[in-house]
Length: 369
Image (tube, rainbow, N blue to C red; front, side, top):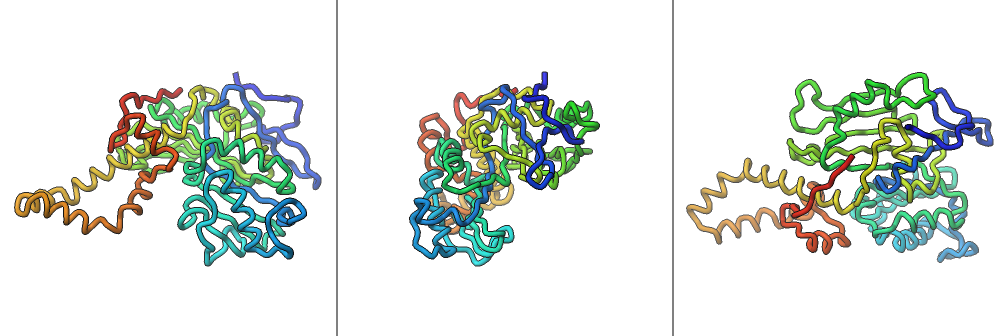
């Protein structure tokens, strides 16, 4: 049964609980469900806070007057303690209408720090890759950081909650059926949220279909998509359920960091089924396997015949030299592109778990739903 907490709260026309803020405007309150605890992980995080928070009087390591670079490096030092990485470089451009920005990871792969021109606020953001590469347990430490008061009224402006069903029990077809049967309609809402289908539904071609529920501008948007096929395996059953929440007339509490499954399970009646513990290592394992298999199929199609001829005429040593010559500048870029850039903290785990070069693992059966 779909349950909500504190049912006496008023609800808006979408069936969501809300309170009135200081301007008399509705602010939606997120609900939780005990069924979802531990059943999702954070896949994106954006936080803003007043720049006056970073000041020596508040315990920050910086000089007075505090300039933009001081803000960035003081914040980066704290973030590195939490997630394990800090600033990679100063960027030429700003980010999300902020005047100045710094990348976390090369080309902002792991996220950004931004400041300037946005009503005296600072922004920091962790991308999906950043969340994956962050130190184990970073979510609880981030919660402590936000709740500590060091940032003076920080605000989560976006968070993505993700559940991976590697066996594909909850498919995009089931998501569409659930929407058709009003299982994405909140009990007090007059109708179901908007729905859209992406990629070829009439004749699925293995590229990976997506069902979108809701509207991104509303601050609550759900994607159910064929993740394994998106990574290149046309037969993969791997389905991802991803809820994007934005602070558009919406309150995002800090404990979403430590209870993502509870909030995901409560987002819609259709997601009550969530009952499988999520582990980042399982997702990385599957991503590595899908990416490697897709790359191997590509090499077979595009270069297999040429390599066979070279091997027959010149021998294995020539082929080894040829491969080294044409790949020396491509290794890291292709690993990143195909999901093979495994976080350092997971390398030993993958090796100890019996994962071979294709990402296969002897007991790599992840049951979901």
